[in-house]
Image (cartoon, rainbow, N blue to C red):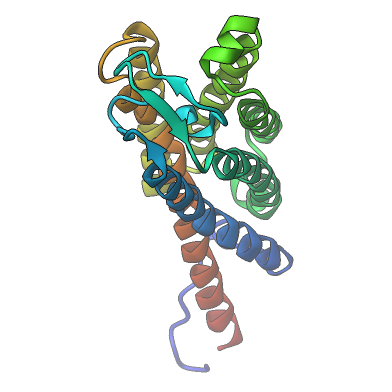
Length: 246
């Protein structure tokens, strides 16, 4: 408005108009995905016989589709909803890839495309890894016939790929305009990487489920954080558009 002081938004800090539908799509995926994953994981754990421990049991124990004797408890064990958990892995992998691809397209004007290529690569690695985890369970049957190695490879691809991507997302975020998001990404990626190192070093210990989750859950937190960050960018862009119209 004439006579009013107009506040200008710094260039390169708001989403381009044509990128908003992409940002909305990515935000919806990343806000919903961790809720869906954790919700299904919990539902599946309730149908685990004898009992499931988030501290002692691996996540993939929920996806073993047959009865076996648990080496930790020597009890007959069966995950009644194993197929649901395996589907959870697959859906999570593909939605992660789709959401991440859209995320890179939406935020390239803000990041300058920094680390886009390696971030795209690790999202593919994550997707393939988590699908491989679903395709090849890690139970005693697979260990006996030698197929479990593919389960381990898939888990490594998914966990390493996710944590590398989180760190790259932090490095790509401009330190001047997105310092909070950048810092939280770097923190989450570091926590996940350290958790993985401890899990590998202490493999077979009584807290193996806890240490494995310390390397996995930072990725779920990152997805939700990224969804919130995109909502913030969309609101910021709406404010900038309103200022331009004055």
